[in-house]
Image (spheres, rainbow, N blue to C red):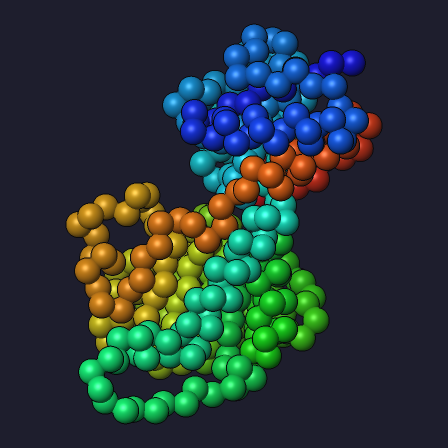
Length: 310
């Protein structure tokens, strides 16, 4: 049976996915008619990333699922017309990208690389960092991305504590859970990596109270979601020296407005939401495999729970 699959995302994404999806579908044993303009009533599956074109899912009465190209789905699940099952993107390329970005910036702060790069005035000032085993790193959020980053950091020898809403286990890391567990995970942390989902329960996870739990001069690394941080509280912590530096990849408003104080602050690094970009080649394989599961009558992977928001 031929499956009608609609690709509904911004124009710039189409050429790369058009180059990879057909081969992925064929390898998965699927006969697919992939288009950008199927009649809604004929569509079996929708590959989706939010854009100005598709905002009403009501006409897609035959669609069995909507497969998001993004790991984060908080801007999708608020659409009341979306009644079809929704999957989020989890794939090796996205995970590897996040692990590389996180480990790079954690090592940057651990080794004091900024100080060495900026100190080029002829002054010989050797400052030896501690070994990784003596550096306390906390990872908030132990989903697929957080768990992969925590695993990589333990592999480098860091003293890693992870926190998640539900209990998890990661070899070599201390894993905490529950409301009280977050405070325990943050207490004394020298580097904090934020990889929580964006939900009502996680908004402002880093605020005045929680930032005060960190070790004096700690580093904050946020490739997760902008609303996880109270911006004003972080700026105050940076100005007081409670936080030495914040490396931020995600923001409440994107692109980050030119007038936002993060741009000008000497202790903030802004990166333009690049920590874990979905790679079309690996994403296509994941999408095809998930549709194949559905067609075999198996439960699709990475289905979003509307109650938890992820």
